[in-house]
Length: 170
Image 1 (spheres, rainbow, N blue to C red):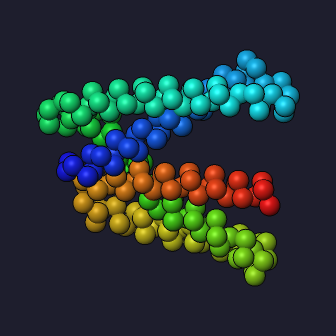
Image 2 (cartoon, one colour):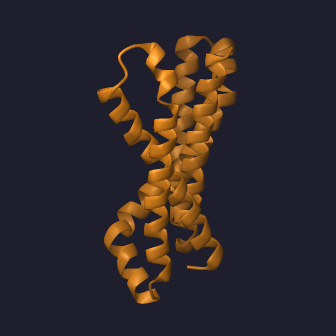
């Protein structure tokens, strides 16, 4: 893998580690502490601490992997990622396109066509985007699949979270 690909993969893994830490902290807080909606305001430091713990754990994994030689990296890639994992990571790229469609065009589509026709049209758009993504998978160089997928997953999560925040404050 080239240097840019390794850096993008490391950054993506660190972001995912951070959010996984927040998710684990959220689950622990929900089970152990949160009883009412007012309790949610008090757990933000706990969530940030969970995110930082996930970020540090991910940083240790990235640092250990980055220090290894090429043969070991190839073994790690084949053992933990493999062809199926590479494909699942890559799926973030077409899904990010659909997430942006949902974010900006879905509501106007429903207003224009109606609920039923708009939903079926959105389904058709999803199928077309998925088919184009599957077709592009074989044509994209193998070294770009993981970085494209990681960037796609990050954009997907960011667009869906942005849409949720927008709807909450509207």
